[in-house]
Image 1 (cartoon, rainbow, N blue to C red):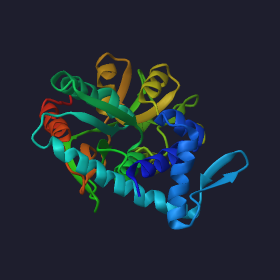
Image 2: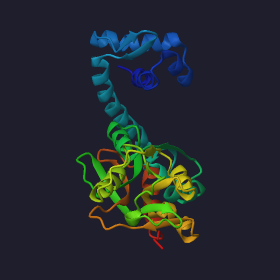
Image 3: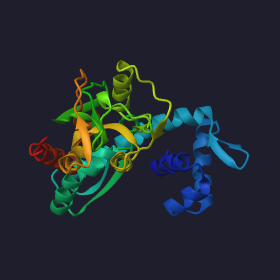
Image 4: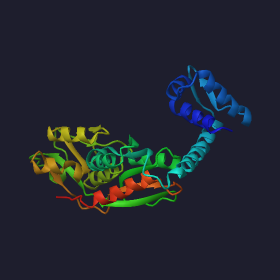
Length: 293
């Protein structure tokens, strides 16, 4: 069975369309059909089924996809063996949640691209829960996470820096415990966000059960809404410290048993190419200068 057939299968499964996959891979659609038929003939089982005008994976196709992701990850590692003695090169697939992308990652990426312009970097912006899934499946080489110090059987975790979390309210906010005022709402990050549940617990501890909320994945949007008096929220301190210093926001770091850290995570079976190793070392060095004022 050819690796290119497996890569074609993964791309079709990812895009949910033979046509889109053919365009992205630069193949004729008939070529993709032939490649999928070759796999189906080998196993004597269908990989896809048509539902209306769309296609979806069969039960066997879903199981096959899980195995193929692992195979392709191992294959990528074998291909990278040629880089062992070489300078960092190739493509890095990394992930980061929104706040780390905006406030922690950009100086690292800037310094890395300056030092290794030949390395192509692809960054996925998602909540930590989804990024971990992408690490498990092999879609990412490495991810930056903001979460407590958890351990995972399949992931290697490197703690870079402890990050205080803070309650955020508009300037001049007078409600006790940073709860919303009568005409204000609670601004939540998305459901999969690593620190959302920490905020929910805080509200529950203060006997506050919000029914007027707004949910968004954008930390920048939350800050703008809070500054303009729409409501209150809970964010990493590094994301709001400049606005707090300027008097645009009120912030309070609550007493909590949960400690959050900026972390680097990668699969334990992942072969660390020179490009990955260089990014890890640069991140560790850069994080030494991070401060909380």
